[in-house]
Image 1 (cartoon, rainbow, N blue to C red):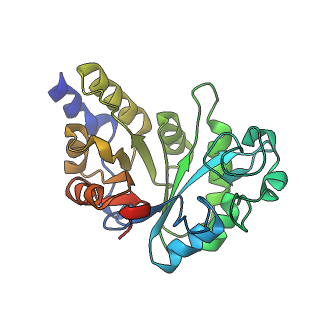
Image 2 (cartoon, helix red, strand yellow; image 1 turned 45 degrees about the vertical axis):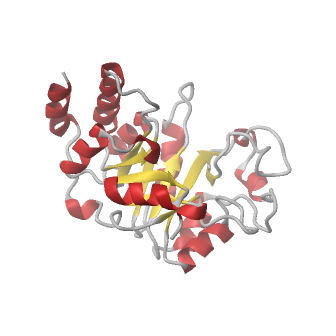
Length: 256
């Protein structure tokens, strides 16, 4: 069964042209920007610090109550700001006025982040989703902002519906599938990973570094789908990333 699934991968999820994802390999991506020491995660300051050191940037995007793509990780405001409640209950203007805890920055929109990055370093945009929510509205909000952006970038998500949406509606946008095996190396887990791969049709994978070595990741990498890996937080994990992946998504002690 495993050999059959792997044999079907090129048919249902073909590898990208190498130049489509050449910007990914060999680059360190700062996880939610180069945060710490007074710089909040997913903040303009953290992104500027990453740019200054030549790192790529990984950021998280979700939708405001009025349909704008905002850069923020958690569903709730509580952990990262002095406010409470769901992000999706606030307008983009209201979110943009909320200070990030311990920082002079406020919550940025994806449009503001693109203007800051301006193509100077590659950008990985993780589209946040929930199984009980449709993804089309957020995907559309992201695509609208990306129109005309020429810097190297890709969208990615744990949710294969996101990759599927971009494959259909924005095929020029490089797309990735975020994967964690969560110790599910049984046949059923392997089947689920292949089904997610076929639905998303990704140009790259973003893989949980704790899962390496992974037969699934290695098989995709061999056939030309590059593999980034998250979250690299130590020198030991950085060495593992160098052995099994093409690009670390790192923070803290995982940053060289």
